[in-house]
Length: 285
Image 1 (cartoon, rainbow, N blue to C red):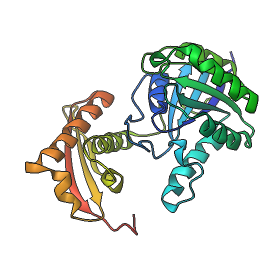
Image 2: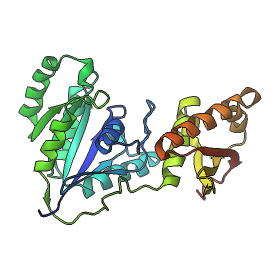
Image 3: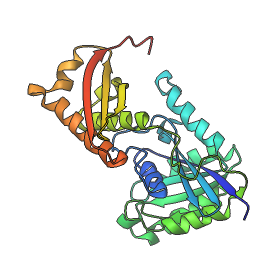
Image 4: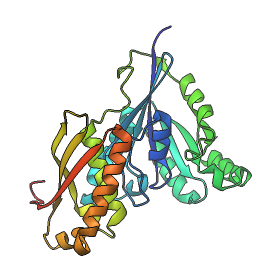
């Protein structure tokens, strides 16, 4: 049997469930999940091999800022468009219980200009009656040309196999891009940094989490199989240090423990995580 491949970009607004969907496809946690905006900053690739078919999923940053031309959003927009450009088809993921039809149609009109097959995935179907979505499907079809619609719940694993089977049918003859045992293009250091960034988003509020960069200093497998990780939390202003530490160091402790638990769950190894808060020069970073 000839090998086949399909590259799929997963796009949609923040909190639509893109990262959850990617993790479910792959069967492992490779993309962090957080309710705050722009949890995913870089395009993360997940790989699902089914028999002779390799499905490559590209998780992209939230599409919220597609029309935003501010300098601060340039990297996010670049990652989004790169993910779309690399793919054969687009999965547009929608939060079924909370979406704006006009907002959606505007974005679809922009995406239609790149002339790639678009599949709309209504996610979180477990939280809403599917019948209430049918009028929206008709309105979308009357304004745009969408190839197909799917109704799923990534969290409850509803409708996932039906979606995967449809994607398999769209695959094309090609040699695989990734080895049989590879599930992502990101290494263990990237994933561990992402776990810490997720913990920062969880325990710090407002704009502060987005002004902190996580940098790996040391990642070492110990003789007993444990992993020792040292990371720096880089901040522009040392005034933030007190906030990150928290009263009697409780905040930084919570961040470290939360990240350590998530890294352990993903890498299936005992983790010894050490965090250090440092100042960095924003112009050089």
